[in-house]
Length: 94
Image 1 (cartoon, rainbow, N blue to C red):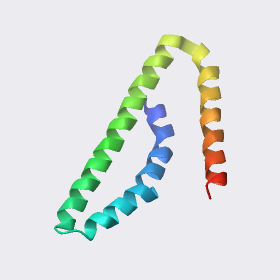
Image 2 (tube, helix red, strand yellow):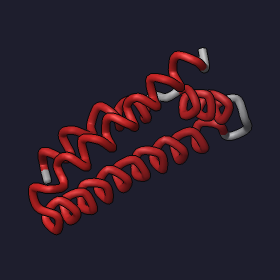
Image 3 (cartoon, rainbow, N blue to C red):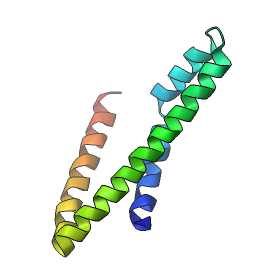
């Protein structure tokens, strides 16, 4: 399970510092009582990311235990497909 969490940490860091989260935070800071709203937003964002990573690790470990070693090829193909789609979206959206 720790291996799965370690593999997801770079993704979580990228999501945590995404432009959408930072733009929302900056907009909240300009509103009335913006500091309290921004702090609540940041705490909620971090708890949500932690929950998603935990859920992903638990489900991934359960799938791996159920399928055994046969799942490794399937998981690698899915990861390559997701990575290729992210590269495609990154290149053609900018």
